[in-house]
Length: 259
Ligand code: PEP
Image (tube, rainbow, N blue to C red):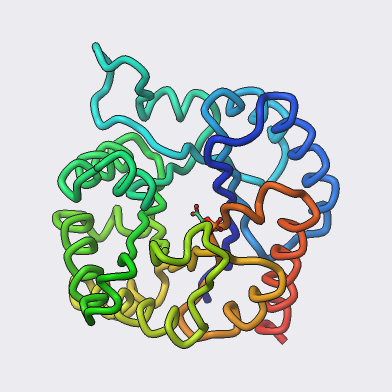
Protein backbone atom coordinates (compact mmCIF):
# COMPACT_ATOMS: atom_id res chain seq x y z
CA UNK A 1 0.00 0.00 0.00
CA UNK A 2 1.23 3.54 -0.82
CA UNK A 3 2.00 5.80 2.10
CA UNK A 4 0.05 9.04 2.30
CA UNK A 5 2.16 12.18 2.22
CA UNK A 6 1.40 15.78 3.13
CA UNK A 7 4.06 18.31 2.13
CA UNK A 8 4.16 22.02 3.01
CA UNK A 9 5.53 24.55 0.55
CA UNK A 10 6.00 27.78 2.46
CA UNK A 11 7.36 29.61 -0.59
CA UNK A 12 8.94 32.97 0.42
CA UNK A 13 7.22 33.09 3.81
CA UNK A 14 8.44 32.81 7.41
CA UNK A 15 11.72 34.05 8.83
CA UNK A 16 13.86 31.81 11.03
CA UNK A 17 11.96 32.50 14.26
CA UNK A 18 8.57 32.02 12.62
CA UNK A 19 9.75 28.77 11.03
CA UNK A 20 11.03 27.55 14.38
CA UNK A 21 7.83 28.42 16.24
CA UNK A 22 5.66 26.75 13.60
CA UNK A 23 7.77 23.57 13.55
CA UNK A 24 7.85 23.29 17.33
CA UNK A 25 4.11 23.68 17.57
CA UNK A 26 3.41 21.24 14.71
CA UNK A 27 5.77 18.62 16.16
CA UNK A 28 3.83 18.63 19.42
CA UNK A 29 0.54 18.16 17.58
CA UNK A 30 1.92 15.27 15.53
CA UNK A 31 3.24 13.14 18.37
CA UNK A 32 0.63 10.43 17.73
CA UNK A 33 0.81 10.54 13.96
CA UNK A 34 1.42 7.03 12.63
CA UNK A 35 0.52 6.70 9.00
CA UNK A 36 1.02 10.00 7.22
CA UNK A 37 4.46 11.18 6.15
CA UNK A 38 5.04 14.93 6.60
CA UNK A 39 7.55 17.00 4.63
CA UNK A 40 8.19 20.67 5.42
CA UNK A 41 9.73 22.84 2.71
CA UNK A 42 10.66 26.15 4.37
CA UNK A 43 12.82 28.88 2.84
CA UNK A 44 16.53 27.97 2.59
CA UNK A 45 17.41 30.30 5.46
CA UNK A 46 15.38 28.26 7.97
CA UNK A 47 16.45 24.77 6.92
CA UNK A 48 19.41 24.13 9.16
CA UNK A 49 17.84 25.62 12.26
CA UNK A 50 14.68 23.56 11.82
CA UNK A 51 16.64 20.41 11.06
CA UNK A 52 18.19 20.62 14.52
CA UNK A 53 14.70 20.75 16.00
CA UNK A 54 13.57 17.76 13.91
CA UNK A 55 16.52 15.50 14.73
CA UNK A 56 14.49 12.76 16.42
CA UNK A 57 11.27 13.48 14.60
CA UNK A 58 9.63 11.71 11.69
CA UNK A 59 8.90 15.04 10.00
CA UNK A 60 11.16 15.37 6.96
CA UNK A 61 12.63 18.48 5.38
CA UNK A 62 12.79 19.55 1.76
CA UNK A 63 14.21 22.44 -0.23
CA UNK A 64 11.96 24.48 -2.54
CA UNK A 65 14.44 24.55 -5.41
CA UNK A 66 18.08 23.83 -6.23
CA UNK A 67 20.73 24.35 -8.91
CA UNK A 68 21.90 21.38 -10.96
CA UNK A 69 25.62 22.19 -10.73
CA UNK A 70 27.78 21.02 -7.84
CA UNK A 71 29.26 24.41 -7.02
CA UNK A 72 30.63 27.50 -8.73
CA UNK A 73 29.85 31.03 -9.81
CA UNK A 74 26.05 30.90 -9.56
CA UNK A 75 25.19 33.84 -7.34
CA UNK A 76 22.08 33.26 -5.29
CA UNK A 77 21.82 29.55 -6.03
CA UNK A 78 21.87 26.51 -3.73
CA UNK A 79 23.35 23.08 -4.54
CA UNK A 80 22.11 19.58 -3.79
CA UNK A 81 24.88 18.96 -1.24
CA UNK A 82 24.01 22.23 0.51
CA UNK A 83 20.43 21.02 0.87
CA UNK A 84 21.60 17.62 2.11
CA UNK A 85 23.95 19.13 4.66
CA UNK A 86 21.15 21.41 5.88
CA UNK A 87 19.04 18.35 6.72
CA UNK A 88 16.96 17.88 3.56
CA UNK A 89 15.87 14.54 2.16
CA UNK A 90 13.57 16.10 -0.44
CA UNK A 91 13.51 18.94 -2.94
CA UNK A 92 10.57 20.44 -4.85
CA UNK A 93 11.44 20.73 -8.55
CA UNK A 94 9.42 22.10 -11.45
CA UNK A 95 6.99 24.05 -9.27
CA UNK A 96 4.73 26.16 -11.47
CA UNK A 97 6.14 29.37 -9.98
CA UNK A 98 9.61 28.23 -11.04
CA UNK A 99 8.30 27.28 -14.48
CA UNK A 100 6.18 30.36 -15.13
CA UNK A 101 7.59 33.17 -12.97
CA UNK A 102 11.25 32.21 -13.35
CA UNK A 103 10.92 30.70 -16.83
CA UNK A 104 12.40 27.32 -15.97
CA UNK A 105 12.19 24.98 -18.94
CA UNK A 106 11.54 21.24 -18.97
CA UNK A 107 15.21 20.80 -19.93
CA UNK A 108 16.46 22.77 -16.93
CA UNK A 109 14.10 20.96 -14.57
CA UNK A 110 15.33 17.62 -15.93
CA UNK A 111 18.95 18.53 -15.14
CA UNK A 112 17.91 19.40 -11.58
CA UNK A 113 16.03 16.11 -11.17
CA UNK A 114 19.06 14.10 -12.29
CA UNK A 115 21.32 16.04 -9.93
CA UNK A 116 18.91 15.54 -7.02
CA UNK A 117 18.75 11.79 -7.62
CA UNK A 118 22.50 11.41 -7.89
CA UNK A 119 22.87 13.25 -4.57
CA UNK A 120 20.38 11.08 -2.75
CA UNK A 121 17.72 13.80 -2.60
CA UNK A 122 14.17 12.73 -3.37
CA UNK A 123 12.61 15.08 -5.91
CA UNK A 124 8.97 16.16 -5.58
CA UNK A 125 8.39 16.75 -9.27
CA UNK A 126 5.54 19.15 -10.07
CA UNK A 127 3.57 19.01 -13.29
CA UNK A 128 0.42 20.87 -14.28
CA UNK A 129 -1.38 22.68 -17.04
CA UNK A 130 -2.27 26.36 -17.35
CA UNK A 131 -5.92 27.44 -17.59
CA UNK A 132 -5.76 28.13 -21.33
CA UNK A 133 -4.20 24.71 -21.90
CA UNK A 134 -7.04 23.04 -20.00
CA UNK A 135 -9.64 25.11 -21.83
CA UNK A 136 -8.21 24.14 -25.19
CA UNK A 137 -8.22 20.43 -24.31
CA UNK A 138 -4.43 20.17 -24.02
CA UNK A 139 -4.15 19.00 -20.40
CA UNK A 140 -3.05 15.41 -21.15
CA UNK A 141 -0.59 16.57 -23.80
CA UNK A 142 1.04 19.09 -21.45
CA UNK A 143 1.27 16.53 -18.65
CA UNK A 144 2.74 13.94 -21.02
CA UNK A 145 5.41 16.39 -22.23
CA UNK A 146 6.36 17.49 -18.71
CA UNK A 147 6.37 13.88 -17.47
CA UNK A 148 8.43 12.52 -20.38
CA UNK A 149 11.03 15.23 -20.10
CA UNK A 150 11.37 14.73 -16.33
CA UNK A 151 11.51 10.93 -16.29
CA UNK A 152 13.53 10.06 -19.36
CA UNK A 153 16.49 7.88 -18.44
CA UNK A 154 15.54 7.44 -14.77
CA UNK A 155 16.32 3.85 -13.80
CA UNK A 156 13.96 1.49 -11.99
CA UNK A 157 16.28 1.74 -8.97
CA UNK A 158 15.88 5.51 -8.82
CA UNK A 159 12.23 5.84 -9.72
CA UNK A 160 11.10 4.84 -6.24
CA UNK A 161 12.88 7.92 -4.88
CA UNK A 162 10.52 10.21 -6.81
CA UNK A 163 7.24 11.81 -5.82
CA UNK A 164 5.01 13.46 -8.42
CA UNK A 165 2.74 16.40 -7.58
CA UNK A 166 -0.06 17.26 -9.97
CA UNK A 167 -0.58 20.99 -9.54
CA UNK A 168 -2.87 22.63 -12.10
CA UNK A 169 -1.49 26.16 -12.46
CA UNK A 170 -5.00 27.66 -12.35
CA UNK A 171 -5.57 26.15 -8.91
CA UNK A 172 -2.38 27.31 -7.20
CA UNK A 173 -2.94 30.12 -4.74
CA UNK A 174 -6.22 31.04 -6.45
CA UNK A 175 -8.71 29.49 -4.03
CA UNK A 176 -10.03 27.41 -6.96
CA UNK A 177 -9.49 23.71 -6.38
CA UNK A 178 -9.66 21.03 -9.04
CA UNK A 179 -12.70 18.86 -8.40
CA UNK A 180 -11.87 15.36 -7.17
CA UNK A 181 -12.90 14.09 -10.63
CA UNK A 182 -10.62 16.52 -12.47
CA UNK A 183 -7.67 15.75 -10.18
CA UNK A 184 -8.25 12.01 -10.26
CA UNK A 185 -8.49 11.95 -14.05
CA UNK A 186 -5.13 13.69 -14.55
CA UNK A 187 -3.48 11.73 -11.75
CA UNK A 188 -4.69 8.57 -13.50
CA UNK A 189 -3.05 9.81 -16.71
CA UNK A 190 0.20 10.30 -14.78
CA UNK A 191 -0.02 6.83 -13.23
CA UNK A 192 -0.54 5.32 -16.67
CA UNK A 193 2.53 7.18 -17.96
CA UNK A 194 4.57 5.65 -15.13
CA UNK A 195 3.15 2.24 -15.96
CA UNK A 196 3.92 2.62 -19.68
CA UNK A 197 7.52 3.59 -18.92
CA UNK A 198 8.16 1.10 -16.10
CA UNK A 199 5.42 -1.32 -15.07
CA UNK A 200 2.10 -1.42 -13.20
CA UNK A 201 3.70 -2.35 -9.89
CA UNK A 202 5.98 0.69 -9.94
CA UNK A 203 3.09 2.89 -11.07
CA UNK A 204 0.91 1.62 -8.25
CA UNK A 205 3.55 2.36 -5.65
CA UNK A 206 4.39 5.86 -6.96
CA UNK A 207 3.11 8.59 -4.61
CA UNK A 208 1.15 11.12 -6.67
CA UNK A 209 0.13 14.19 -4.70
CA UNK A 210 -2.40 16.84 -5.58
CA UNK A 211 -1.67 20.53 -5.03
CA UNK A 212 -3.77 23.62 -5.65
CA UNK A 213 -5.77 25.46 -2.96
CA UNK A 214 -6.04 22.43 -0.67
CA UNK A 215 -7.73 23.23 2.66
CA UNK A 216 -9.25 21.10 5.38
CA UNK A 217 -12.69 21.72 3.81
CA UNK A 218 -11.79 20.08 0.48
CA UNK A 219 -9.08 17.66 1.66
CA UNK A 220 -11.50 14.85 2.54
CA UNK A 221 -13.21 14.60 -0.83
CA UNK A 222 -9.85 14.80 -2.60
CA UNK A 223 -8.02 12.19 -0.51
CA UNK A 224 -10.94 9.78 -0.88
CA UNK A 225 -10.49 9.95 -4.64
CA UNK A 226 -8.66 7.30 -6.62
CA UNK A 227 -5.05 8.15 -7.51
CA UNK A 228 -4.56 10.93 -4.92
CA UNK A 229 -1.96 9.89 -2.33
CA UNK A 230 -1.65 13.13 -0.44
CA UNK A 231 -1.12 16.84 -0.89
CA UNK A 232 1.41 19.54 -1.61
CA UNK A 233 0.02 22.50 0.30
CA UNK A 234 0.97 26.16 -0.13
CA UNK A 235 -1.20 28.81 1.54
CA UNK A 236 -2.91 26.51 4.03
CA UNK A 237 0.45 25.20 5.26
CA UNK A 238 1.38 28.59 6.74
CA UNK A 239 -0.92 28.36 9.76
CA UNK A 240 -0.22 25.44 12.09
CA UNK A 241 -3.86 24.68 12.85
CA UNK A 242 -4.91 24.79 9.19
CA UNK A 243 -2.04 22.54 8.15
CA UNK A 244 -2.69 20.17 11.05
CA UNK A 245 -6.36 19.87 10.06
CA UNK A 246 -5.35 18.77 6.56
CA UNK A 247 -2.88 16.25 8.00
CA UNK A 248 -5.59 14.96 10.29
CA UNK A 249 -7.98 14.39 7.37
CA UNK A 250 -5.30 12.36 5.58
CA UNK A 251 -4.35 10.44 8.73
CA UNK A 252 -7.98 9.50 9.45
CA UNK A 253 -8.40 8.39 5.86
CA UNK A 254 -5.25 6.22 6.09
CA UNK A 255 -6.47 4.63 9.32
CA UNK A 256 -9.83 3.90 7.68
CA UNK A 257 -8.08 2.24 4.73
CA UNK A 258 -6.24 -0.18 6.99
CA UNK A 259 -9.37 -1.41 8.79
C1 PEP B 1 1.81 25.22 -4.07
O1 PEP B 1 2.41 26.28 -4.04
O2 PEP B 1 2.41 24.18 -4.35
C2 PEP B 1 0.38 25.23 -3.77
C3 PEP B 1 -0.30 24.14 -4.00
O3 PEP B 1 -0.14 26.41 -3.28
P1 PEP B 1 -1.63 26.63 -2.72
O4 PEP B 1 -1.94 25.48 -1.79
O5 PEP B 1 -1.57 27.95 -2.01
O6 PEP B 1 -2.55 26.65 -3.90
